[in-house]
Image 1 (cartoon, rainbow, N blue to C red):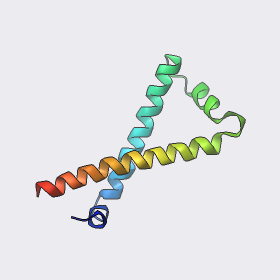
Image 2 (tube, one colour; image 1 turned 45 degrees about the horizontal axis):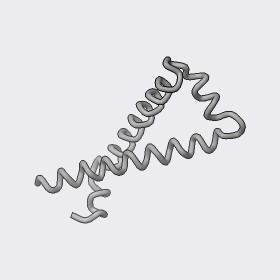
Image 3 (cartoon, rainbow, N blue to C red; image 1 turned 90 degrees about the vertical axis):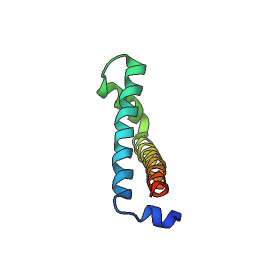
Image 4 (cartoon, helix red, strand yellow; image 1 turned 30 degrees about the horizontal axis):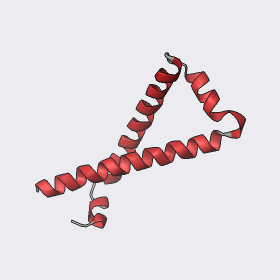
Length: 84
């Protein structure tokens, strides 16, 4: 199947969204634990958004979530198509 038909399948974009959100949560929690050794949410986000870096942080998080979710969903849906 083609790229266009893969991304137009039912549930593809929903999968992209949920995989992206899952990635964001896990990535940020793991980063926080490695950097601080504990759940320091306030300090973690203060450092990342200080000095006017809030927009950059949000854009980076959204782009990373989309890229991760899209790549994994594309792989999953293509694998499912090959099975059938």
